[in-house]
Length: 479
Ligand code: GLN
Image (cartoon, rainbow, N blue to C red):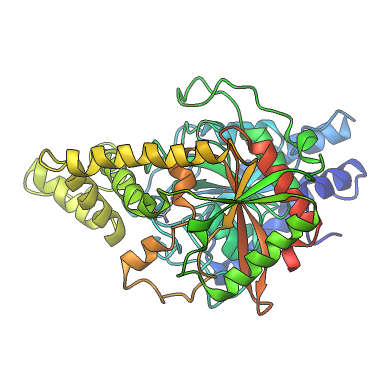
């Protein structure tokens, strides 16, 4: 029986009755039991829910009924996405022992498509981080290089797919948290356009930036999961009413003649030499495929990190105000109401979350709002304009996903600013609202994965997937 399951592989095996959905689910739980103690990638499992869903799929098979697109596919979900009946922590102590009473729309849609939800994955607390080391439940190990971080904040979702403990997973991306862990764990990972996937049931970090998106072992499987979760949801007013294209049909088209923009600002000093060589080799693949390579200028790129860390922290400080010991999770009693707030928030939040609440409160405060938050919004508009202008000249933009390969556990925790600076290539697309994917682009010394990032115009996911798949099918993973 296959060890590297794909969505099509699951479908074929179920249809041919080589395995039942129940057996497949049990096989995945066995793998998790064997491997998770070392990786620390799952925080909670939902075997009853998984079993019930597997039974529904098996009943369809037995009745000879058509199978929905993700029938029987074992998936994992980042622990910032609400799952009815399964503990949801956001990688924090402050929500303990919160069990959501409802499912996020993305979860409902996964299950409606037949997927079997195995459990919840570890992440940086409230998705704030780039290494998964800000989780209150300990770091995740990178399954490809065990002494290294898996990236963050969706480190658990990347690790479980890379380790074969789920066929696909959902993560969230606010400033890189899907794409960067995808790059670090050597698998494709995608955020659709802002508004493409409903955020209903996603516990908010920065609402104008947060997006839910998939990890899988192939670009095709990323597309299949995105297809299942995308589309308008009346419960999220920012979700788009635009029709969702048929991604799989669109992405098989040849890429010859497509114009790929290479922005100069993304190849400045500071990038690891090993990463640079791999990305250059990756660019050669596109050249051979007949793509036109166009040098671009995106002049506001330098301001992206500062802008992101103003806007994201401002929104986080507002969003996280709801965790006050009254309505959810942890409460530490004090001698007054304010005392209770202080003690609860002091005990419940980790250091990085506190740092961001303080920063965010500062940039929103009366005397500084204009100088920081308002200015940040203006620069955000300029960054978005850089993208819009670029897309009048090119079909997609090619960059590295991260300036560095996966680093060692503990290597960067002492200096938050260094950690923030590593988000340089991902936060731009987040601020602009455009779709982005990271695809595997070789391994440095055959060991450390590198990710190549592609951005497309807003709602141009199909183009991004098409180019990513061409890369994958033409040796991208082994350049
Ligand atoms: N690393 C970035 C941060 O710490 C991005 C996080 C994310 O995308 N959720 O904010």
